[in-house]
Amino acid sequence: MTRQLYAVGNWKMYKTSREATQYIEELAPLVENCRAHVYLAVPYTSIAPASHYAKDTQIVIGAQNMHDAREGAFTGEVASLMLKEAGAKFTLLGHSERRQQFRETDAAIHKKVLRALQDDIQPIVCVGETWQEREKGQAEEVLRNQIMACLGEIPKEEAEKILLAYEPVWAIGTGKTATPEIAQAMHAHCREILGELFGKRKANTISILYGGSVKPDNVAELIAEKDIDGVLVGGASLDPATFAKIAHHCEKGK
Ligand code: 13P
Image 1 (spheres, rainbow, N blue to C red):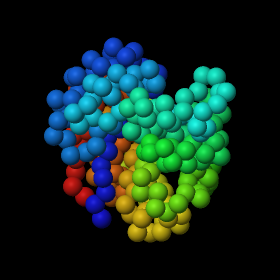
Image 2: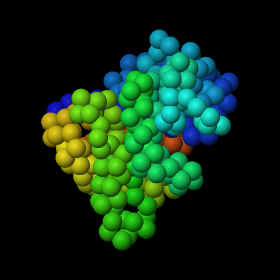
Image 3: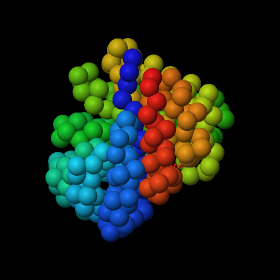
């Protein structure tokens, strides 16, 4: 089974619009012939200018979050159609920083996934356990609950538009990457749950990305694993040359 491969940068709350466009100009020639999809999740204010600069390049621009309502009295929030018109093709949903610092629940993430699919924004749904949960032997159960709650009741025919990202919370921004063995085991577990939801055949077509302290020197061993179809990169995506290196490592033929 050949699955699509992805290198996704998550800038988090970094870079002004001007910095974003400079970055795109530097990154574009470096990933010109990259066989992996090169995605950048940028701050809201950079979506329109980054999309403009990324036109006719290999780079695809997206958001880091969105609201689930079409529109309404939700001060400070942004709706999917606003993202779409600004040029976003995808959005991260349920990143652990959203879950932990902004109290986002699985139920809220589920609503966002449905809205994103409805409005043709590709959702990248993030799941992952904390260190405490892992130590207690609950990692598998935590993932099962998150995936079931975030992706349950999604029509089977829509499932292939979704990307799943496994990001162990303890590996994010800590320099403590999951070993390839742990990451592979968790990705296989995620795929099994996707199989229960959407059928085995469909689950085999859904790309699952790994995130958490991915760097140019550890990406190759992660991507070599059978069920790892790409990476979601925070800190190391902030420099275009570094991110380009990571993207080229994601080109493996499975
Ligand atoms: P780091 O790559 O900085 O660990 O961040 C990972 C992440 O949160 C990507 O979404």
